[in-house]
Image (tube, rainbow, N blue to C red; front, side, top):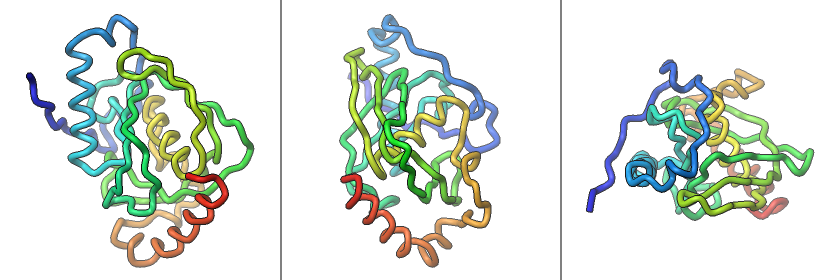
Length: 194
């Protein structure tokens, strides 16, 4: 059996990060190479301690992303998300409510900024085997889904930061912003449950 490989992650400035990823066909899902790629995507996300990773971030512009939060050291305040692979996802806001989320990205190293996200979304996609997924994501978890799916349309979190003064390094975030943001996350979790 083939071992999963850790892939290189595209950094801001790489043209692939600005492409719109193409849809995946059902025939592709059945291919061993596709399934091996999904294993590699998951292994790469875990190796980098990411909360998620889109295929486009590893130089493969297809509409696939993986998400997982299990007591993540980069995001100790994020609620856990079981391993989820989305193929051809469609996100639909189901509430006009929004919240401010301090985001970072494996493709934008050592930078964080505040992004306004929908507080409640419907997620529709296939899983890696083509089974239909249709569920509601709320709060901080909804923000994570929106961040990853933005990648599939060639968008980075820096494009959505409205106030450039919110940009900070990870060290600056930890030192000056994290305590305040953890309190904000707690309020979002209390309101939306995740």
